[in-house]
Image (cartoon, rainbow, N blue to C red; front, side):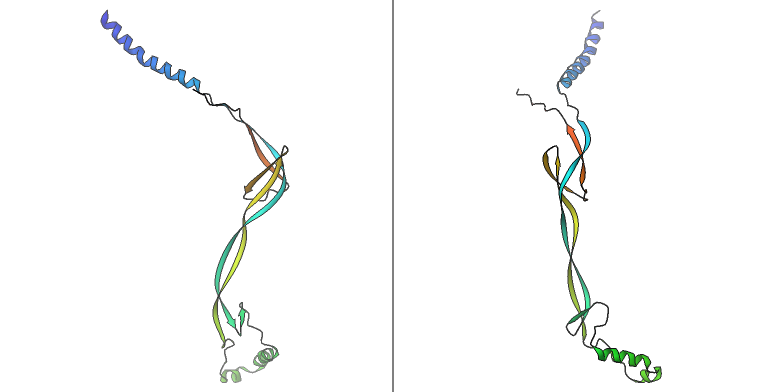
Length: 157
């Protein structure tokens, strides 16, 4: 009979360990979160800008920066263009062509651009003012997530 009792006692040890673990797991209770959605009144929206610097090469003639169009040099340039257009091709081909940009050079020009990357939003919900940084302008009202969870004080053991 002794041989039968020993395996029976050994088989109850893992069961007792499992029961003690279950009892300690019951001591820790995680409160559930109660969630609902509502709307808040937007008070102010302020864009947050990023400043970018871009450099490009542009033609500069006579102290002016050209942006793809030939710089205006007055009435003489217009008259010269009309004369060249009305002159027969053979005659204009015999004359050496003077480049329009003989006194021009390429210059590096830097420009700064500002673009909105976020929005600081001040809003009011249930009489309390809040501020959040959002990726888009919400308009006149902002959908908010309201969460209520009971506060459980830590044990003072």
